Image 1: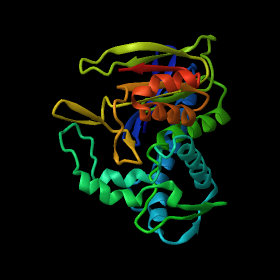
Image 2: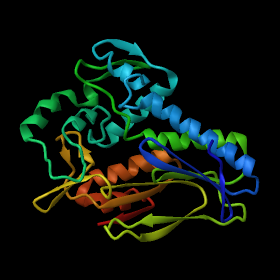
Image 3: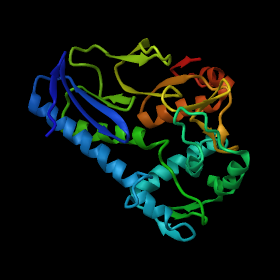
Image 4: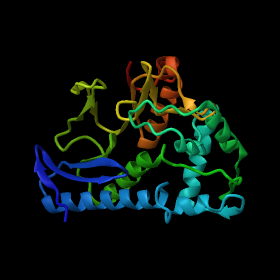
Length: 293
């Protein structure tokens, strides 16, 4: 049984979910409360992972994808996620697209030099495009051969959802970090901000800088962990859904601060999709951010 362990200024509860290390920091002196907070966050992370995992044949998402070709009414939680994804598709001019997950059949981003053939990518493009999906008032109809992948929203949604669960239990300050996507319930018990290190993208490791956060969320999009490299060219795992290829000339990483994790996550991904224009996009939209090239 996992328990919260004492750390400087409170407790820490750790586990692994959604393919990532997850850490909960609880700024209090009550170990039992800290453990309960961690358990609630862990249960919510696993609930969302099991429901929307693309790797589990028994997940709600897999069953939904299996209905392609038929109209089906989705539950309220899924409807809200699909509506948000539809909005992201519109504001990104089709580059952020939850139907582009079929491309993972070709792109592995395992740090090798295995680049898919252009002909293979072209064969998948007809099965990509949210505009091809019939979506209206909780009723979804995926064309045959298409599928939905919520991997671009899952961890961020899990953080936001876990924060709400935790705030219903306690007013103690809490930081929830799922694989680098994080959000706080408010300032620390002493009134100060949480200090969050930004990892360096270089192979030598270390930190690039330090964020101070009193409220809201931080997310980072980048290629430090998932990429391909061939003939001196580095291919980021951020794919342009319209072309089926990694976006050209993206930053090494983009960190964004926003009110919620989902908002920050979409903004950091949109900035990556802008390639060379990432900084101009963030400045134009007055988004609090940190870009590493």
